[in-house]
Amino acid sequence: MSAEGVSPSANGPLPEADGPPPANPSGPASQDPPAPQNSGRRPALARRRALLAILLVGLAYATMIQSFSWNQTSHYDLLRALSHGHTTIDPYQSNTGDKVFYKGHWYSARAPGLALYSLPYYEVAKFLGAEKWARWSQAGADEMIYVVGLWGNVLPGLLLLLLVWRVGERFEPGYGAATAVIVGLGTMVLPLSTLLFSHVFAAFLGFGAFTLMLRERDGPPRPLLLAVAGLAMGYAVSSEYPLFFVALVLGLFLLSRRDQLTPVGVLRRAGAYIAGGIVGIVPLLLYNHYAFNSWTHLAYSDVPRQQKGFFGIGAPSLKVLSTLLFDSRGLFTISPVLLMGAVGTVLLYRRGRRAEALTVAGICLCYVGYNSGYYLPFGGGFMGPRFLTTMLPFLGFPIALALKRFPGPTVALAAISITTTVIATITHPLVGYETETVVWARLLGEGFFQPTIASSFGIGRSWGAIWPFLLPAGAAVVLAVRATPRLALSDRSVGAGLLAILAWGLFAALAPTLLGIDHQGLLSIAAAGDKTALHKGFGSYPLRTLVPIAAAVGLLALAAMKLLRDEPPPGSRPPQSAGPARSQPALSG
Image (tube, rainbow, N blue to C red):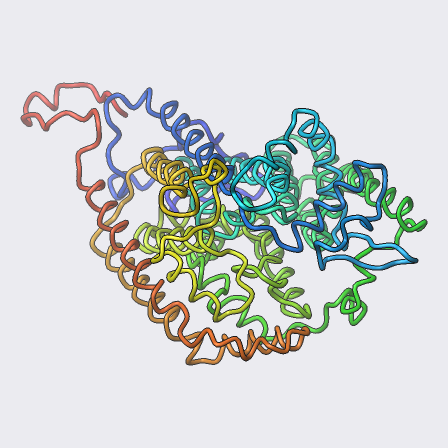
């Protein structure tokens, strides 16, 4: 169905993701290329390519052995403590700053959900000798954090992309795989799937709850599905407390089903969701009781800066919001393709799926609102506003609609986003300051990268060691393109893509410095306690070298997609003469 086609009702069923798309009522006006005569086998082939593409993204995640940071060691310290039957991290506390001191003992400041989830896997890994391999490895990082991360961040990242694929297919059949690869390689999902942070795990649970609700909404009422969604949301809150915002918005989404707005219907469906949520937070309550002798005491509340406002959150600030979105490590600066996710959300609303579109908008507003009032907006050293990670799959799946309706700018911005995100991830994802982003292009030019699985065998950190990541990531992009229908790249669409590249390039290279957005970001860091933030000496216009590289890749992507569009579809036959053609049956209709 094209973006201008018939809009389904808010409660009506959508076509199944792995079935053929409905006929386009616009007839000859459609810009979609004609189906080849062997199209009966192509949906299955496209699904296999799509699945393989996403699995290759997961494989690329698994090859990176990132340098450790306080956040990662805090999760790991809690995991080790739980493995020994304790909640205190006294023996390990010297390796992390993400800790709190409470009644004579040190505790991890992290929510316990990720550590509790990883505990059985950690015990099995130790039994199989993972610690021995970690001591033998030559990668130069804490390889046990990497081993735990295979379960704690790589697997959730892969599962999250599979969900984005299926949801994208639900709303725009054929475009879900490309969307999942764009989200997986072109947003913060990439670096956070290679680091032992809880963001991707929590985002997977939150988006998984939304996916279950979509399935229930488009079929008969099934309170059991809503109970499972509630369970996922409850455990998401146990892993990252701000997921409570998602739980509230999804609760409103649950109530938007008009055919169940009766007292009995609301009680059954909302009751199932709430009951599941209560079960999901039981692990958090038990941990709090065992650690602090209180059901409700959170370790996070003992961080000194968290005691101001509501856990460190004050009134939202437009100045802080501008840094979150537009400074040299801002969300839209590094991943401009997410702007097309916003466009896709509007298209979703116009199609009649207003509840879904408003849910996306509500979650995004909650996150940018709370994050713009938080005392440490970027959460310390990281390449982007990591607290916004949960909204990425929600803002990401509508890219599927934008990719079909506006292919030129979507392809161009996707290529830029993948380039900037990949370069930042493989060089130095844990930058601490806006101006420090200048090191991404510098390290790329020097050929010095983060360790990979090849580095553990003594290959080092140069170009020879980064190929285990680049090969599966590149193959994933190629397969995603092959799994996607030919894009209607008209000259006008290509022109829009060129304008998008130009606009992004000028803004990313100049605006953060000229408009003082980077300076405001540094002021926020200084206000949070790092008084040296304004005197680091990284210079101005930090992305000036990276921008031409990303823009060139955007141009190449546009050119490649245009050439693919102009080629005859595989399996098609050369045109026949007019006379015999009229007597032949339509084989592809």
